[in-house]
Length: 254
Image (cartoon, rainbow, N blue to C red; front, side):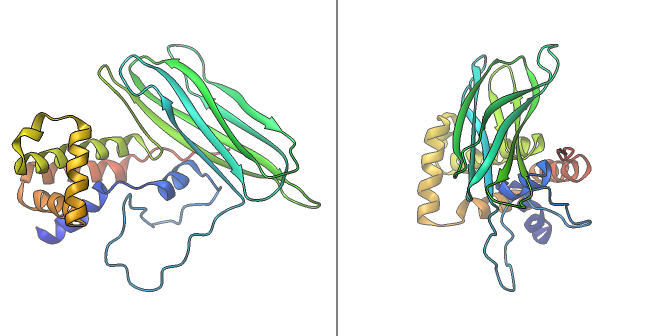
């Protein structure tokens, strides 16, 4: 059971920048057949660790506001380049909303012949309960002769519920994994300080930060312990892992 717990707990360690790139084909890289892309850090890595290779441009998207039920959403899209760009365009693919067909909005376009550093906040409005996937795309042509144009994308998965709004750059399944991890973290904190069972999320987060400062890795080990000793928790984690393997969101293609 301990070894099994050690395997399944990885899927509750929330990461995702590289995973998001695979799911959204942010750099048009083909996923390697048969290779699993974990959502968290891989423990006990052996062999050399190579530095991350950064591309000529980057793109990010998140919620600037609108994380409470009924709120109007505003998306924040940031596009930048590390090389001079002759021309570029940032677009947003908006899914179908309340019967309105999907569409593509132009967020920014220009011919700077310079480094790009653009941040756009785009109002979406209040969304009915449901799941929505927004896709931002940064297409650019580097400055110079005989250069190939490039493009990167970023997804934002938004889960609108009657009581809250949740989002992830990875997948809808990642939102569920994050929810479960937060539930288990609260349970662990409350077992040490019962009054925190009904405390605010901020109060729980402060307690987790204190525990981690005193004992780095405490929460991961405590969650692993729960998975190894509580059959219900182990079953829920196993179900999430199976669903992740069987129903990953389709990668975005240009």
